Image (cartoon, rainbow, N blue to C red):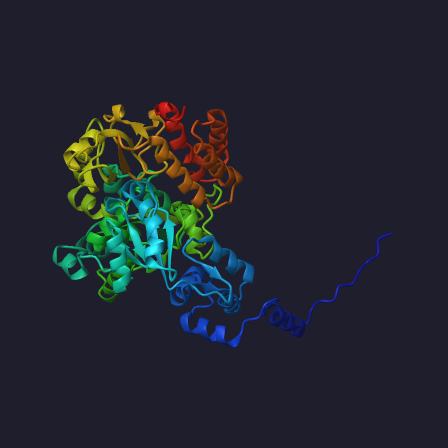
Amino acid sequence: MNQSTTQTLSTVDDMRHTLRRISHLKGRQPDAQSLQEVRALVQAFDRRDLLIEHLHALNDTYRGLFERHLVALAHEMRLPMAEVFEVATFYHHFEVLPNDAKPAALTVRVCDGLSCEMGGAKQLLAKLPSLLGADVRVIPAPCVGRCEQAPVAVVHQNAVPHATLDRVLAAVSAGDTQQALPDYVDMDAYVADGGYALVAALAKGETQTDDVLKAMEASGLRGLGGAGFPAGRKWRIVREQTAPRVMAVNIDEGEPGTFKDRTYLERDPHRFLEGLLIAAHVVGIDAVYIYLRDEYHGCRDMLRQELAALQANPPCPLPLIELRRGAGAYICGEESAMIESIEGKRGEPRMRPPYIAQVGLFGRPTLEHNLETLYWVRDIVQKGPGWFSSFGRHGRTGLRSFSVSGRVNQPGVKLAPAGITLQELVDEYCGGMLAGHTLYAYLPGGASGGILPAHMNNIPLDFDTLQPYDCFIGSAAVIVLSQHDKARDAALNMMQFFAHESCGQCTPCRVGTAKAVQLMQAPVWDNATLEDLNQVMADASICGLGQAAPNPVRSIQKYFAQEIV
């Protein structure tokens, strides 16, 4: 027989007591000094999404994240200590330290990406520790987004281009630890040259939003962060979603070999910002979050300055604009991982569906764009969609910004017609190969885009042209190898990067990349086992990192078999 039970409802006093009890940390309690130090640096404790910004403030001030500060921060933000700790340990630029640790007086990072490795990074890493002494920590760093300046060392927050032992020692000795602001077009100069006239006309109704949207669709502009989704179509999809809508701008640019976004930002930041405002007006965006790679310290200071100038003298009503700082995680270049990071969490990719255009940042429909995509908006609308589509070679249309590094005379960002071949790009835009070097191989799309041999130098470089060769263009990061290089070494460098940057969320990527590194170091490759790994990573990884990680391996197996037998 069933017996009835009587439940006693909590009184108001009971609930108040419970709230007071759970609002206090269990376990380690903060000490008064740590609370004072955290409160001096952090004010917005009620915003969960600012956790990473708060961690940056502590890390910059104390040269690391002491456990006592993490306890105090968790207390003030009313977060579990485990949650704060897992975010702090996820990102490479945060170093969690025990309370009695003595942080290094200075950290020097030497990029060990492919372009820098070709430029002599290993020699720098081998010799700098003994020359700089015990007080200076010298560590390798994944690609820092300055491949045209290889090799690159970063003295605290100051990038030393074309680094030599003498140049690094001089920077350390002089205390040159902060990146200087680039020489750029500021707001006054930009406005004087007609800048912000278009977005002002939009706000006044002199230019119609539907006309701008049609121009974007007709231009054929595709997302230039790597995915290549049609920009105008993306605007229309997000505009059709229920408000409020937000925008996330991806300037994380972590793909080894790419540096175009940094280059454009350093030259003309307001051209990108006007494109951002045009997109926000057409789509109906309430808030914009700009996610900037942490390694771009000079750009961050400059962008803060120019955003302040824009907000002080706006050409139109502005949405909320917040600048967010990455913390050293390649995976945050993936759109959903970036959104997780903006929300103050570990940068782990989300499962799809839903897509971020429907449920994205803070659960709202989200327009996500790469910097360069927005950079071209003003020109496309003012000059007409036919202007952009008038460029192109070999049956392709549009313009592409190629980040070129490696064995060429003139590395850098090369604005060239879409569909240009590698040989044309090197000969016409890069001053040819370095003296004593002949083309041996090239990476058409950075770390994940595969590797092609020299005799395939006449393939049009654009979206959808490289897939038949098991490669893709991605962000158009071109790294050129010569007869003095080995393609297998380039592939190993890429796989080491993937293993280092895997977020660890899914086993195929986390374990597969690490195991592949081991197998690729053997003089003769175990191709059968490697292909098993390739298949599992490509089929079962959550995001593009794991799915594309096999591409360099398969390129070597297909085109450079003589190097691995």
